[in-house]
Length: 572
DNA sequence: GCCGTTTTCGGCCCGACTGTTTTCAGTCG
Image (tube, rainbow, N blue to C red; front, top):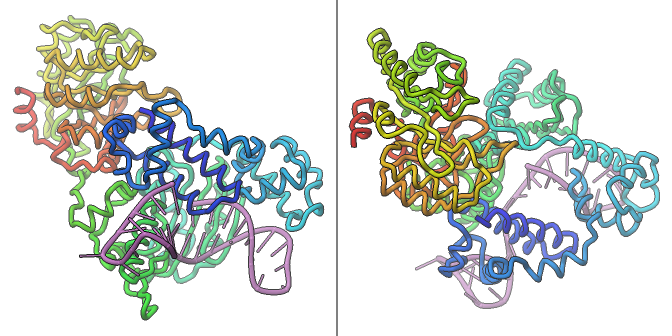
């Protein structure tokens, strides 16, 4: 899939055009196209081959031609031309927070700064200030801080970590002042798989007290900016927290604005404009009278624009605005729809909890069933079960069920898909399980064709119910391996095999884009937590958030079936 | 560079905070 690479290139072109002081709307056109490509579930090469590139929002004739050139030749002449005009140092300096194109140019051309290291040195020696207009001591300090931030900037946080920090901050803030409404916002509220910073929105009668409370939170290390309605801090862990304060009448519109995404905001503001309305964080206003006609709740705001309320998870400008205007917003799956977990390990293999502990935790979560899917024999590092172990374990589970109340334990396996695409247990053994989850745990570096073939062979065996974490990625440590998704989805549909959405926080695999594409092929998704201890069973919500971001409803999710319907499904 | 039941040309979301300014440009989200 080249979408991501081309998206990055377009984004860099936007940076370069900014430095060249090009038309800002042209810059935005490139950024918008970049975002659009990132959210695309189809390979651009395929779209190009079918002449459908201009169907993608934000891609017109010019950009379609550029994408085609990249696909055909592997490069882009236009990029080569403009890239030559901009020294690398300027692009590097622009990556520092607080330094934009204007400042970077000033530093390079007027002050002769040739790299970031020199910039830091000169700033610390106060040799930047006083030499040109508009650059004094404060700016030097900001540059030094910006460089520090870049040096220790963490990769984007996993959603799970950000959500835990965010929810803790909310409860602390509530204790520090008179909060009327409070919510997380930004990409965290949209449940993106990783998050750069944490956004919090508050409505209050006493903004000063809330601001002071915020700035004096124990986690705060550095105040980036603070004003009557907006403050930003950096925590001791180097995470940026943004707080925005409005009054109650604006809480809904501020929440829409602050939740974004930016592309979503631009789109709905455009819709508003056509209707003679203006949308900002304070409300929806009539152009004619200047009067506020909505703002208190999100629902009011969307209603004023002729739309139903939209779940935050799909506010990415990937068709949700059009769907809303057409009255076709999908009913998304909810955590309460989930009746069980398909992917749970026990201490029979590499889990830390006993089958009883895992099952009773599932019962407490309100589940009706749980599949214990320990590893298969070849995965020695995970103490995979031999055929003899399998018999003992299944027998043990059958007996355990007589004691358990309210939940049914089923015997499954996470069987290895071997390097040649065969399965780690023979058909006779596999037949003994209530459910077979299959996964790749070795040979990640094989070619795209080979990996695709392995998974397809596993699905075509007729023994596999679910393919677990299909792309093998571990966020922050291992990239997804490339697969021919179209072929995988086609065969999954044909063989009635489900694909997993792993709720495990480092995996979230399939991701939102691929899961949405799978649905379009008619494939059912199964959400599994891949839990290795009881506490991890809680992470189902992250799998559900991926499903929601993929526009999936309960009918698309295997775990929303009742036990009886599920058993019927598995028999087929 | 994109886009169009106002338009194929002339628009393009909107506002907060900072620093260095006597009224605003730059940056960010």
